[in-house]
Length: 293
Image (cartoon, rainbow, N blue to C red; front, side, top):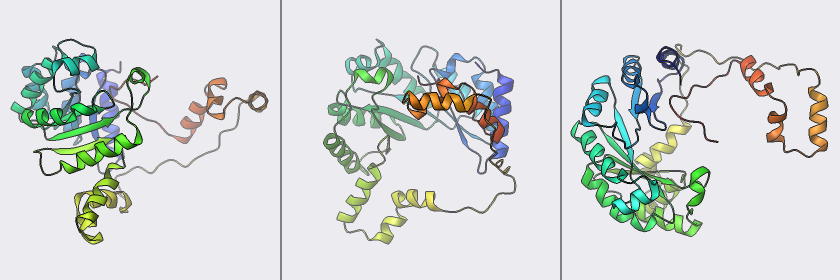
């Protein structure tokens, strides 16, 4: 676990190195396991960074804690809801009582005036429950419902991803709900959702210009828009070629003879990738998120 001082330094570097400043999401695991979470949120907010928290539904997440996070400067929070009933949600999560704790925490977040996002896993085991979950999300008072399409890795391998046809039908259904629900629907690991929305707008008679000016069109345009250089942003270091350590060429030849896939070469030549990144000045900071193995 990083110390508060080192994490605060990383947050400060992020606020000055990037323009506009990034949005920081404290996640995990459970970020509430850090006793200094409130201090970190306050530090990030004081630096002008947007801050969200994605906690787990545990006994730590009380109404008092939610109030403290709001006072510290949290702009939004998210909770996971994978079933419309305790049996279905707790069955997916594997934690008895998790459904009731999630609803209590969600109620506290909404009551505190913090915008709430509900995250729902989409897979063969949950797809027929999405209609009921959507009604529950609306009743909770969430601002956004994010559909996370299953990527079967890690513990997700015990679940079943949707087929291409099932995913298409599910995204069509999600798009049909736009305007009928009091929340915004978004997707993760399903970028073709935008394609489906655009197709529906075309079938509704919208012109290309009207679609371009719509929220989905502006989303595409935001990626294409070029920004003027910001004088506050530190220039990226130039790439530099790092000389190979002695014997690296022989190792490469041996790996090639053994037909070892190139992505695995770094495992056999430890430190080379790290040395190159350090020489180029590159680094990355992850706040609170466990490495996926």
